[in-house]
Figure 1 (cartoon, helix red, strand yellow):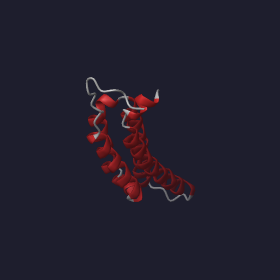
Figure 2 (cartoon, one colour; figure 1 turned 90 degrees about the vertical axis):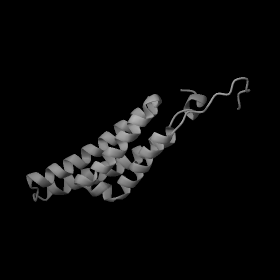
Figure 3 (cartoon, helix red, strand yellow; figure 1 turned 120 degrees about the vertical axis):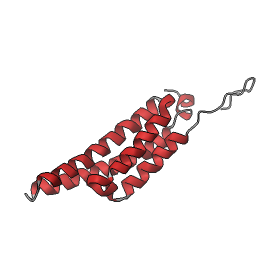
Length: 125
């Protein structure tokens, strides 16, 4: 991918969303580890933490898709927003910080607009 193509992609929103998803994933994985290692895991508690971990993984996947397929930026941004809201179930939104960062990244992805090409304009370097 060239620098020009990179500049014309929603890279910033994909990175912000992926960071939020990674925080949610890490909080969920730590919660799973604690529940399993201390033997105090109920079926419901394990399910909650597993779902929180899954939300983090899905946010990261949709962040990658947002970057790779920029023409679907509204759909992927909306999916990231929905998954970040769903992360409250299981990981408390990645201790709120993961939710907030992924939510902002999803909004950035939805409002991203490609640069308009002006006919007859010279390319900038």
